Image 1 (cartoon, one colour):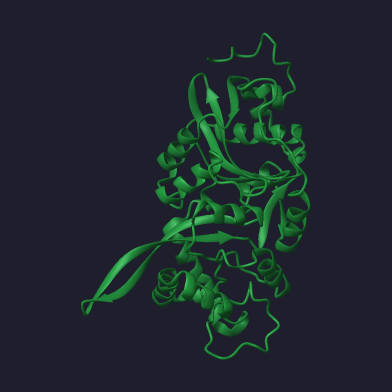
Image 2: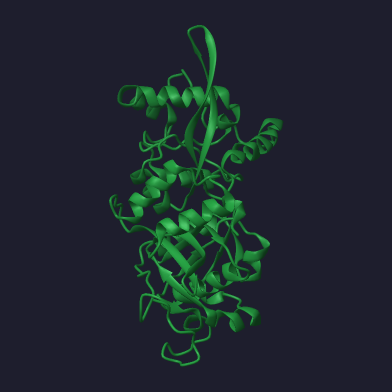
Length: 347
């Protein structure tokens, strides 16, 4: 389930494949070229001008700047993708990428604290964590170590839908009475399930910690919130996902299942829940066959950001209606919560 968002160390390998396209002259010039030339005649605003941002960081964060240069030197492919920092106006940078018809999905950054991740969520990015090798010379000897960074994704083609467009199979309708859904009840359990199913991949401990700060509201940025969605069979957590909301937009980040069909039931119940709470956009990231089967559609990067910038200003509340733990048949089949045929609500 959602394996495309679980790439981790393989992320840059995919970037290397894209690099071949970049180097054959069919794509724009390097996005991170740091020039020694005077750029005073450019029309680029200071908060998206990489040379100006480097100058600021050389004063405020010299060690971070050294890390950036070391990563670019060791992983040459990073030179071809936009670098993001807290000093950027991210919305303006996205506008620039849209204007030049940026056709890849990757950006990168070495800042991964919760407040910056919130900004990335707010602007429509899906931040994927990674560890990359860095080589330095220490005592005249080469030394290789791993450095944490983020690969915030923007997806040239995005998988999105309105929650009301969900396709629910007869199999899901038949089985859903056996399951209950909760929201924000077991964040740690969902994280454990994801790591258990997929390995750490991009959900490294450092990003788990930052996500939890957002989830616990220790870090706040505008209307960005982090959530966990849990699906229960009796008293067992059998599926779930991490997601975030910005206004009336819900983004599915990554999930897991432990029981056959549980992942699909969780997605269908989630869709009906989002519809009930008047969410306008469900962002599923990269389009995969199982997403298409439940009704998700491909939209362009430009169309996605147009929708995202519209719906993030429209508020919607993300919670389970009626009770803390709700039988999925209430959402999927429209049954009354007091229906005696529904499996008793586990304590």
